[in-house]
Image (cartoon, rainbow over all chains, first blue to last red; front, side, top):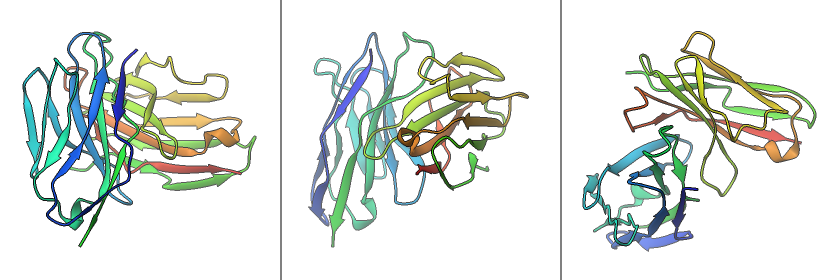
Length: 114
Length: 114
């Protein structure tokens, strides 16, 4: 079945450091890929998405590129802020299932120190 | 636009008791999902509705869990009887339709089974 693997956290960075959170996936066909973020005490929010190979999703300075050849969707940000501290989830939906439920990775906690 | 509403936010019960969670999706959203998020893991689908019909309940432990969406709007998820391993956050999400990928999440209900 479909699966998503993320790098384990926590990831601890200083403010203005470069961020990469690795995400790889296994799925049939051509899934849509997502990054969701969960701030403390809040629900999951969509951060960015990509629906086909070589698409780049971007939002709030975060970027991720859909790489079909490496089945990856790594999240990057050039300069993190304390306010970016949260748990980040990589996820996919598989068009082949037709059911559209999200398959999530286990999440990566990011802690940004001032 | 109001988001996905869930209640209660927190619930503590003893094992073998019953509990119910309520979800009100975003107005006009036909597709509704219930996910279970165990501490340290990504959310996992329990059940998916399209209007008032079930699309996927393959991961729902039907001996103890039940869910309904009678009028195609609000939904209720019930556990009876609860087990210790049911301690988790129960997330409700909605999307406009099966064809629209973006799911919007509620803040969740945190269940502790003692």
